Image (cartoon, rainbow, N blue to C red):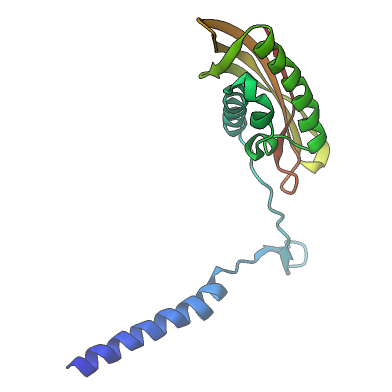
Length: 187
């Protein structure tokens, strides 16, 4: 009896391995074909895949970027802005470096002149606009504008300021991905 159970287990194992290695691969392969009405011949079609980028995903990315970038300690702004998490939000190193220099100048002013030790933002509110689409390359451009309440915690007091922001994003197709190419912040 034990021998039959072991034999049955081995047979099930062998069938599952054969299914995984040989059969599943062959059955998953799909070919798109078309039937020509003119000459009644089958033709294989080449199907290019393209990422589908929804506005809701871009809006969520924009909100997360604003919260990630603007929750920090101005005295440690250099460490904060140099993190890989923030660098990865930007499209290229040149876009990141341009924003980084502006951010550090602003943070230094907040820390040294306004005596702010912690800046916090929780819920940015904004509107996403599709600015443009570039031809057949699949390039899409968005602008996310809005405002965010920002808590400025300083020595002895806490103030609430409302900041306006603009986040400019671009999608460069399946190989380029999505990234920020500019952020503007005003009071």
